[in-house]
Structures are given as C-alpha cells and as structure tokens.
Image (cartoon, rainbow, N blue to C red; front, side):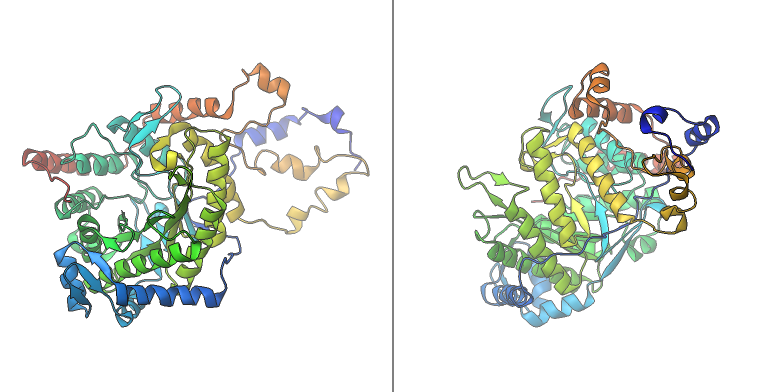
Length: 515
C-alpha cells in the first residue's frame, strides 16, 4: 500500500506491464458523435419567434428573386405568386414544406460503419472546403490542383473525426467540363466516407450520380431510396437564388439526395449589420430553399444551414472567429431548433497563415458551433484567408482540437473500477503517488488522449528533438499520410466500369457547368 515518491519511480515500469501496454491499443470511436454540450441561446424565445415571423413576412411581401424558370414554375404550381423573376412564397407553403422535411437523415457511405445520421444532437465534422488555393510549408501558396485535391482526400479519410468529405480545393488544372469526373472518381477511389457532389447543372449532377451508383453497385431505385451523397447550396444574399443553385436543389431532391442549404452572409455587406437582421435574412433564404425541395419531392432530405459572420469595417474583408460570428452561430441554432431540422454551421479563420490568430479564430468559431448545437460543422479544419486557402499544416493542427472534442463526446464513467477504491486508493499512502498503482499500470497506455501534433515534452527534450514548432511537426505528419497507398475503397471491377463511363463521357465532350 505504501507509495514511493515520483522522483524515485519516474521512468520505471514493471516488465510485464510494459509489454502489455505496448501491445494494447486505445480504442476510440469518432465516427458517430453526439454533441454533449448544453446549447446556448443569444436571443429570448420571443425574439427568435419574431425573427421567424419576420422571415415569413419577408418571403410573402418582399419575395425571393429566382433566376431559374423551372424553379419559378415549381413555386407557382405550389401556390406562390410569381411576378417576373420575383417569387412571393406564402407562409402556408413554408409550413407545409417544413411538415414534410425529414428531422433525421440517414446518410449512406461506402461502408456501413461510415454511415452518418444527421439530426439535432448529432455531430459531424468536415474539413475546409471550396478554396481556390492550397498552401503548405514545402511549396507555399498556389492555385489548387488535382494533386492537392487527392492529397486532401487522403488526409480527410485518414482521420475518423472527419465523418463527411468536403470539396477541399478547386483542382484548377482540370478543365471544368470534366472536373466533376475527377473529383467524384477521386472520392470513390480514396475514401469510403460520405461523399460530396458539386451542383453545377443537371448534366454534371446526372453524371456524378451515375458514377456514384456504379462505384457503390446501386440500382436507380436503391440510389434514390436513401441519401448517398450531398451538396452545398449557397443562396446569393440578399434574397436571390441563382440558376445552378436552384437547379441543384431540384436535381438533388428529385433523386433523394441531400442538399445542405447555406446562405453565406456577412453582416454589414450582403446582410444587415446586426446579428438579428442577418440571421433573419439567412433564415428566410433557407426557408425558400427548403420549400423548393419539398415542392419538388416531399420528404427529400434537406439540411438547414447558415454561415454568417461580419466584415472588418475598416477594410471590408470577411472576419471569422469573432464574437459576432459566435453569436450568429448561436442564433442560427435557435432558428434550426425551432424548425426541428438538422443544420450546419461553420468555423474558419481569416488569418493568412497557420499562426496563433488562425488557431484562436478557428477555435472560437468551432465553440460557437458546438454550443449552438450544430449537426454539421464545415470548415472545421484547414481553412485560411476567409476561405481562399486550405492549409495542409492547419488541417493537421486543427485535427488535434477536433479529436479532443470527439473525446468529450464520449463522456466518462464513474464505476467501481474508475473510482478505483480497490485498485488505486487503497494502494497509496498519504504523500505517496499513483504511478505504480494497479489501476495506473492497467491504463497508463490507454487512458489519455494521445495528440497528433501537440508536443508535451519539456523544453530540454523538445530542444534535443530539433525545437520544431507545431506547423513544422505537422508537415512531417501530412507528408507521411499522402505518401502512403490507401487500400482500395471500390472493388476493381466497379472501378473499371467507372473508368469506362468516364472515358465515354469525356470522348463525348464532358459536361460544362451551367451558370
């Protein structure tokens, strides 16, 4: 029972305990997370209800500008008043759409253990998405390429804390008429996670759906029966739904695939300068998009969303990870919970490199999402320059924070073994230590989270190892990931059929994006 002092025992381990610890592995599951944090409100229930009513009034009295004739026809058939390009949506239409929009969406991935269920209380992360540039410490900042897209796919697949794939960077060295073949095939070959499909016109969407069906071995009926992919739909704030986004909502709804509606609003620029005004506008645009999907196909999977922050009023540049960004996430969460729908929010950073500013902004934005109860957190890792760049190193350094959040999602236990009266407390005398207690020896190699890139060594050891900062350590980590050959994610015969489809379509000229 008598414990020795830490200085005498530090570094010593019993031989059999060391051997057992070296062969044991810490088992964690980051694939299906539940948000453990109590949600916060920024407005009172009455204020939030008034914002909702104002959004309905906006749609009915002011209307949405809808540029796609087919979408206007669908709205009109559903009872909307259409005047030129302006569509006035009655609140009864919105209420009917909200009644059929699913509260829980089962997302089918390439393997059953990768499936994701999106509903209030669930939590899924995506890495930074949609950037025109890539950057890393080896090659610097550059336009995104096919090689970058492949690398980011490998990195996102490597870490279980990313449950959904994202359109990391635009592979600008691939022509736009065949780019969707490359991005879809890359995902089918390198990951079995829930994939992203671009909504850039019906021909590209149809191609991508066909490719996904080939790779997954699905009939048309099986593909349309469940959500096998998703897209991001950005409204053009204020109150405009453009042609490719409206067409994307229609195409994905008709085929039973998931759309995540995301008005991207910056307070003081394309939205009112106040949180209440900006979220009311964003809410109205979401309601208009949700209504279009449910008019197209009642029950079509749809995810509420917003990405609202403020601009820097000195420069006009987007700012992220600000107190206002945090409050906007909380407000969006209130609106989503009022509807009962799964919803997406976003972290991100306006910093130009992976520095303290980038870490601070991303974490404050992330905590806004978590305390708002976001179902999907996009741009949770890697995002710089307000979305103009995805950083290899920042992807890695942000993963450590996301993993720690995932650890908190698992909660903890306080059973007899965890309390440790018999296997810990009775073994140590006053002023002793617990290094050699049976509980410690059983758990020392598996109890605590082991960081990906954080370094807990003291100054002397850190110096002996080269005094490397976190970004430099992250470089070695991502290089090892992208250098490895992942196991095949699609059976060879399906991949051959996929390649044959791509070759035929490219010979036919591909499918230019629609605008």
